[in-house]
Length: 421
Image (cartoon, rainbow, N blue to C red):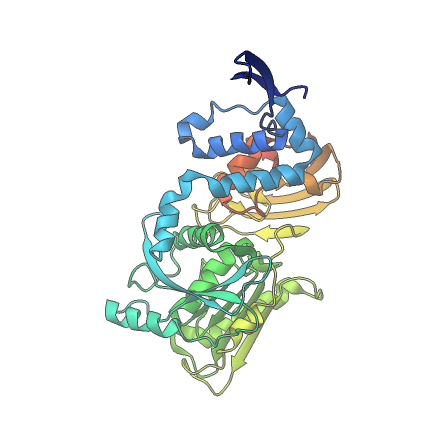
């Protein structure tokens, strides 16, 4: 057959004569352009950081992204998951531990019910304790491993995370979110977790963590709950919860450290943000009048949390950064985040409106497959308007996967505003 390789063979016939035959050897089918691109993306992920800049994607490969962005994104995610760069993270996950910037924390993990077709939902549960001896925090961690009632009819993974230290803010310093993001990334890679169905829950010390982690990185969660805790001044930014389910519960007699008073004030601030609208700030406060700090009726909360699914591309968002660590928030990125700054962003078809307070550089992160073929977008900020090309890029795609470790938060189009444009 045309294109097949051939080979010759010699045999001796019954008369003793040598006869030669030509054999057609079928060749392995040539790799499809998509398979070849996936292999190159894998080599990009496997390469050392300084070597990645030398790997160039061809014009034909960039055109493949433009023509079939969904298939290319799926191939890129497969390559990301196969990459050897995850070896240490996989080993840590198998040993039931996770690392952050300079933190390390153990966890327990168990299956409840049957795995759904789209992957396991994940519940991350955080224990009480905090500023106490290690034995106290270890005991509280053991309690959290069985505290919330199992819901076997739903099917999920239950992960009880031990605080990385025994300090008063073990679950809510500025670096804890990196550890949580690494934990979710490893669970998606190693345990077939559905990244759109990750929930966060905590009691007392863990509840304070939910108030901080949940408002810093709400784009990682489908739902969040806090019990027997309160918002932390300067760290809990309720306006960041514009499209994320957040519930909190406190006892009416739980007045230590101003817990009841601060929860009531937070609830009022959310109501003010919501105004007359019913489609924003899905935040709900439960005040249990007869309870103190313990014994709250929250043992069934996992069932409620697991009803939710994350929305990674809300049409509008508000981000008030509270640290200099986290650079990404849903579909915007600030290369140099600072406390005290604020971003409002709204997408309406090919038009994106920005309101920036104290922000000098901003990146708008988009998915070409959701742009309905638009080749140009308009950015509006105050009186300034700019039309920018919506050009998908393979390098943008792989860099965003590397940075975020989440197929749904990855992007292939970036629009830059400010000094970075």
